Image (cartoon, rainbow over all chains, first blue to last red; front, side, top):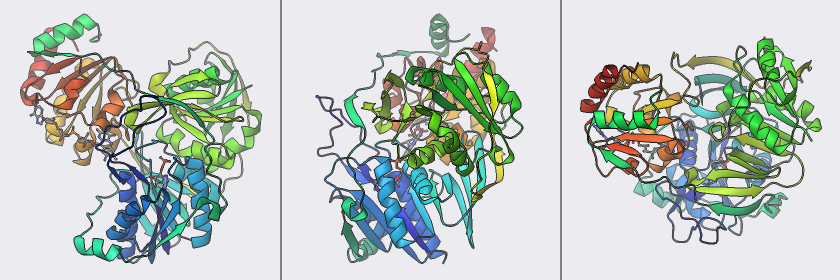
Length: 250
Length: 314
Ligand SMILES: Cc1cc2nc3c(=O)[nH]c(=O)nc-3n(C[C@H](O)[C@H](O)[C@H](O)COP(=O)(O)OP(=O)(O)OC[C@H]3O[C@@H](n4cnc5c(N)ncnc54)[C@H](O)[C@@H]3O)c2cc1C
Ligand SMILES: Nc1ncnc2c1ncn2[C@@H]1O[C@H](COP(=O)(O)O)[C@@H](O)[C@H]1O
């Protein structure tokens, strides 16, 4: 069984982004970029499936500018077998368009399982996995905490608002990762070297017949309201005096 | 112009997240209809009918909806979607699971996690862990939106909507419920509590986390946590507050032994009053705290418990 893993190149999670003065977007010039952390978890899970003999091949896909090839190299160094770069001009591609491209790739590659991240930490959309599953008519297990893959089905334990829920889905299916599914490995130096020889195929959205023109109009991107400066208190009793004065202690 | 809100409930009770989503829906396209999909959930439909501003409740009471799994829910919502200009769900794990499927099938892009309705087609929503607020205008056609419930007031009670039973849609049969492990707690729900006390890695163990329970009991507060505390197994996953956990905005948020990473701040910086207790004077949490106490938490928490008692709180 082939496993498909979409990986997105995003601003590194340690970076606090700045808004451009003209409010047209966030300033990404000279900002550190990395693989979306949830996608690292997705690659790790796919590679483990291969190591356990449950997957035969792990294919990583990234939709983005030429530099997204670096993100694919990271996936290859972690153990993915090959990459597909769907090259764009660098403008953000909306989740629905990403899902349509992934659908076309899934139809061509025929994976038995697709693992995406639950959300990209730049758009915070939390949409692509679910949209892809719907477009393919496949079931899904989102926000995965644990996975058991057996024969033609998968048992996926999900992190939900009230705790954990387990669903059983038929394959093929889409799973989206949550934080505690696994601890992604660091790529070793020999594996980084080996990854340089693994193939990355270059495509464009047009190859899949998908129009990536944005459908939303971004009117502006602004700073969130700033909190006023606070004060330090010296003791528990001073703290409680303040809180009682604020009227927040009922 | 009508909008449809997907009700959040557990078959027994309607959740407050629904009322808040109704408020957002009314700002986009009134009147508002509410879809209650579940099993043996007539009481939920009755509760939804009492929300002010709701004109009609659609009730789909059938076994496939008992757990609101995404696949049968997608089919059900698509079966009624034609009549609506907007379809909204709260940005809960249930809403986030279902709505993008519907959006994809309708070939309509979705706006996630809106915090304001600027115009019926224009919304504000946070991106980059809340470090930027994007104002987007959606294309003509249906609006598909998930709602950050902490950003909207709950619609009041006082409605008297008609309840219309609707037929179940064909269940694709590709998914089934296989078990759950729900956190049991007598405390208020994290996302709607007036006071939240959260612990981080600084608590050091599951055992130590109980220090927070005592204070929470006194304050009728919910208990939350940072990712590090959840990852370390001190508390269950559903305690996590932050960019990729729960969003909270209580009157009072008390952060104990939490450093204040951007991902954590994303989930709590809209709280009215923030208190930080941390022994590191340079911890970033102090930059958003209204009141900061630079102390060892193991000294502060017993004192806090005692002092609250002295003041007759809890
Ligand atoms: C993709 C991704 C998503 C994430 N999502 C979230 C999220 O939703 N929510 C979230 O919280 N995090 C999230 N994180 C993690 C986040 O980046 C931080 O790692 C995490 O918030 C740190 O938790 P912490 O503050 O408890 O631990 P630490 O950063 O280790 O801080 C512990 C603090 O406790 C203090 N302390 C220690 N002992 C004591 C003592 N005895 N008395 C007083 N103070 C003490 C220390 O001074 C320190 O400031 C995410 C990370 C990634 C990569
Ligand atoms: N441009 C992209 N290229 C590859 N995968 C993507 C892209 N955008 C989103 N994804 C995948 O979809 C997941 C959810 O993204 P989102 O719905 O945008 O929050 C990510 O974790 C990735 O696995």
